Image (cartoon, rainbow, N blue to C red; front, top):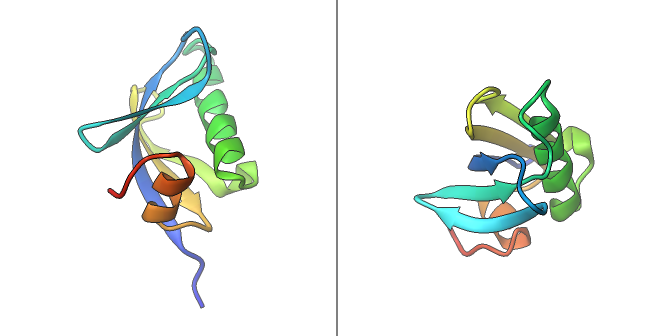
Length: 93
C-alpha cells in the first residue's frame, strides 16, 4: 500500500513575535516563525514547526517549491491533505 503524501500551500511570515499555525487564507496555511529569512533559517523553522505540530519526523516534511518566496508548496509524507489540516486545527480543504 502506498504511503499517503500531501502537498499543501503555505504562506510564511518570518520574524514573527512567536511561532504558530495562524489559520488559513485563500487555501494557503498561514505559518509564523521567529527566524529571519536569512540563509534558509525561516525555511528550517517552518519545517521544524510543521513536523512537530503534525507529530512526524522532520524528514517527512519538505519544501518542494518557493524556497525564496513567502508562498511555498510543502510535501508531507505519511498523511493525506485532510489529515494534515486536521492535525493543524484547520477544517477540510
